[in-house]
Length: 178
Image 1 (cartoon, rainbow, N blue to C red):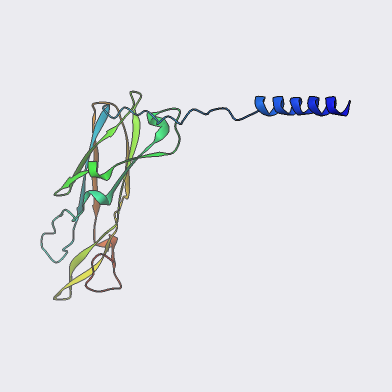
Image 2: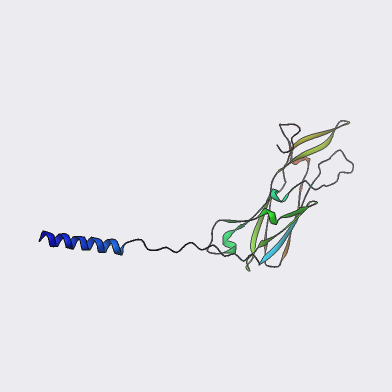
């Protein structure tokens, strides 16, 4: 009788393990985003880096595409997604103060945010009758732009300006990247 109970218990155990074993899982599928459905965004970044000049003129800071961070809330592109979609900054074109990029957008519209990094540089100004040049960090008056766009639309994000009030002298003289 003990032998029958042992065989019966072994069979029940084997059946339980067999039925509750791990099932083969489907691999995760990548999120689908229609990158052919885009909008174009443009904007300007200007500053007055030389207040010793009369009249003062706006200039384009020496920015590169890596100074721009373009993001979209993933769920605006795919309702099943979460997190933030980052548009590669290699897509940002910048020249003479004007930036432009294309970003994927949904038919219902998508809000795109652009953040611009602070930038090392110089500021020239008059101190009594002397002209002084200082190294430091230029800080944007408006660090980010956001706008909603629809496929095929061109959106002008406006002009972002910064003046001498947005300049902090760096501790290390001679190094504008500090």
